[in-house]
Image (cartoon, rainbow, N blue to C red):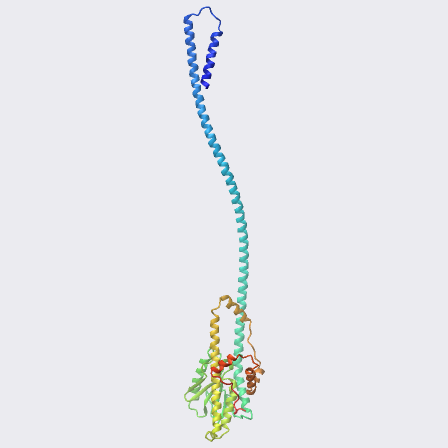
Length: 408
């Protein structure tokens, strides 16, 4: 039963109650009945209208209720979805917060690590700069020390050569008349004042101790050959063989040690060669005339000078080849990695030049002692590989030189 029928039933019951509850009259006027019926119909119509209106309102309310119910379900579903999304967002937010906290911690750690590395790099850079300054200072000190040693070597060289020549010429086995630039023989003067001269068969052999601070000793020697030949040219008193004496250390830098200019021969020799030359000259001067020499003695003299010439040239050739080989090795070292080259430079900067005492050098100036030392080096007990000996022989060094019989 719907609500409309229920209301109609209540209305009918009410009307019946009103009709039957009134006092009965013995007779009803027809007109009254008609009027009463009309009134009842009007009231019933009004009730029906109100009921219809109420039904419409109720239907409208039901529709609204249904709409509200639908909207409520929709809102509930949306709220449920939003709650789920909110829960997911909160969980994601929590995850992001944890990740952000981790990122912040990682960032802080990396910043500290970066700052630490920057600090270490600054320390390393400062240490490197200090090391560079130290190496530069040591290099400058070493260069200055080498320059002083080189200057000292050149400064002492001239005096040492003069003193050694004077000492040798006074020995009984030589006994040469000598002159220097402060004590020249009669007839000498002007600009030409040689360092040292030895009188030989009526002529004067020039020994000139060369002193040079030039970076290129070869150019210096070349220039001195030309300037010297201009000074002595056409002077019959000068023996046509001039000797330039340079230190042993400087001999290795020369590529040419023999010159021929305007009928004069020039030789660049180390100080050790002076005694051999004086011995040869003494042997020649022991005869009044060269043509009176015994053929055997003449041959001995020629052999001595030839061996002397060959020995000096061979020694210089070996020094030059060794220097070239050393330069080649140094060039190969430049192909190494920079850090290895820097480490090599540090090690090399700490090394010091080996110093030889004058006593050691003077001891080895004696030919017999030199031969004894050579015999020790080439004996079976020496740690010289046979391969190296074979290489020397293949290079033309078939035997080690021995003192010439003319010098003994």
